[in-house]
Image (cartoon, rainbow, N blue to C red; front, side, top):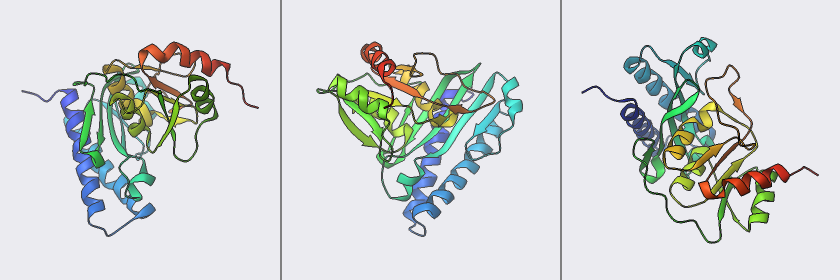
Length: 247
């Protein structure tokens, strides 16, 4: 039987994670040098395998030169071979591998590997959502917490939880470790396409911070903001985000 898109995404995300763990485990490199080597090794495998398995599809990778001819195609694979390069190079666990398929601009299939935790989460097999945390927990960047997120958290009485990569943060909501991931510091399509596919399959709310849908396979791959949260919190989070104004 032919491998489905979801099976392909899961297999490749897990395989890239194994490559990254093996490279780090050798102990020959660390820090930025390790991150660069990991990006290159994981990207080479992912691009080779996707092109072999889906030769008629387009491909957008953080580590490959973009070809905007992809915008004329319905199906585009969007990958981030190593999301959280800093965390990976520091020996932390909060980094990820993203493999997604966008169809007509929609994040349709996704797999997010969390190799440091031995997990790969997919849009094809979402786990039941856990009960909300008490108090609520809201994810922010380790290095640059967004002012909007801090504003919303204060008004919700939510605890801030600092974490590394976008994929790790999104999957923390999927796994029930947190309830809200609000990001306004700017990302690119490869930073969140796979996490969004997994999160929406799990029943979470996903959107831009103004509530509009996330669209992929754009000529400009920059995405300014993102909200992934429990569905019952979405209305209040969006309302509070709209109230925020910088000093």
